[in-house]
Structure formats: structure tokens, C-alpha cells
Length: 348
Image 1 (cartoon, rainbow, N blue to C red):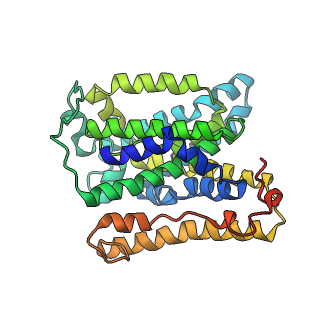
Image 2: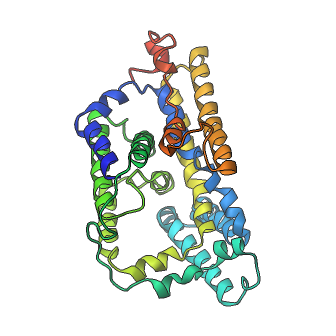
């Protein structure tokens, strides 16, 4: 992660990523943004189905409160539009805690118990009260070429995913498409975040939160001040282990129900970019159809093969090679009759 972070830093602050995004016409943005939302479909209803008695009420309650109950009163409209998600999580979380305490999951299979219980793995009892992170807290980093190249591939993928999330956020917040220099700066800052996480021993890198992007749609809150305040809260409370363990006790099907709605909103926002191009052009239909279908079909092919035998279809000892081949970039829009600028929606 430490080495791969420099890829994002160089691409971002070197303005190279911004120059690449100039090739992103609306015909390219549509599949990019759509696949950012649809690419996580396995984390939706399949995960919700592991505990239907918690996930399904969360899904129904969120839709009902967000779209129907807000019509009751003008004040209720404002409150439920912005805070319906928090209310629903609290209600269903308390319901899951009641089921756990009452012994509803004492004699069930392991998968159901892990998905439904709020006290799994003794999170609260094992978490420390205060733990201040510091660099190299897990020991000196070990650099292996196979892991480095794998993370470099992941850095490119996360950059493309974040770019799609930025376009979706701009669309849902009513802003214009982000310019190239803003996208470059964002990817560079993402690289700095990856560098810090690598130094502090984090398990994952930095990328845009697709769920938060989807939340822009129903809440209509696109202020940067909200992000700044929430970031300050996260940094401050990160040193309290019990605080993190408390929120980690939320059953995963609750998040799955949220994904079903918010990720769908992100995917739908990607479809709206088609209005900036010529919908009657067979060339555009060809590019969109091939990009969307292969964007879903190829990852599924690799996932199925890796699930069965532990390695990807390419038989190498280096896992990074398989990871890089899992990505596909659409170049059709810039090679198939690229001179048709108006049809492609380039002047958007």
C-alpha cells in the first residue's frame, strides 16, 4: 500500500489523471458510474438474505419513511428526508439486539448467527477503551514484488472507481461535471491517504465512499461542511476502541438493505449522463451495451474461477497478474468513429 500510494500521488499531483479524464465523454461516464453502483450487487440482497428478519424490515422501513411518511407533514418531510436513514438504523438495530438477548439465535447455524447477532465475536468486551494508532504499530513493513504490483493494480482500479463516484456526486448534488484539475487533486489526495494508512498499518486503502454518494440523492445535502465535520468526528472517536466496537456490532444485513437503495441510486445517476449524447446513434448504443455487459460479465467469470480453485484463470504464481487482468478499460469511445464529437457528447 505504501508503494502503490505513490502511483496515485504522481498521477494526481502530476496532472496526468486529469488529462486522462478528458477522454471521458458522457458515453464513457455512463458505464463507469453505473458499474460503480452495480458492481457491488453481491453485497445487496444476497447479503440481506443471510438474515431476512432484520434485513427485509430495514429495507421496507427505509423506503417507507423516506418516500411515504415524509408526506404527512411539512416538518416531517424535512426531518425524514435528511434523517430517515439514522432513524431506521437505530430502530432495526434495537430490534436485532432484542432478538439477540431473547435467545432467538442460540440454536441456529453459524452463518445465521454471524449475520444476525449484535454481540458476535465479543467485540465490546475485547475492544480497548483507548488505543492511539502510531506508525509501524504492527512491525516494519515487508515489501514483496507480487504484493506491490497487486496493490498498484488496485490503485488504478480505485482511481477509476473514485472518478465515477465523483461524477455521480456532482450529478446528484446538482453541480456541473468536475473539471480535470479537481479530479487530479482528488486522486492525489487519495494517494496521500493510502500512504498514511500504509504507515499506520491499515487493512484497506482510501477510496471514495459510494454509499455516501448515493446518500446525496435522498437527503439533498451536498455541503462540504458536512464532510468536514463528520471527518473530524471520525478522527477524534477513532482512538476510542469501545466506540468503534459499538458500531461494529450493527448486523451486516442492515448495511445490505442500505446498499440495495443507495447503490441503485448511484447506478441510476450514471444512466442520466446519456442525455448529453445522441441516444439514437448506433455507435453510442454499441459502446454502451458492450461496456456495461462486459463490465459485469468479466468480473463474474474471474470471481467464479477464483472461488472454485483459489486462483484466477491465468495460471501464474503471482496473484497480482490475475488482479490486473480483472480490470478492463473501455477504449471503444475513442476509437470507433472518434470524429463524431457531437454524437459522443464531448462538448458537455
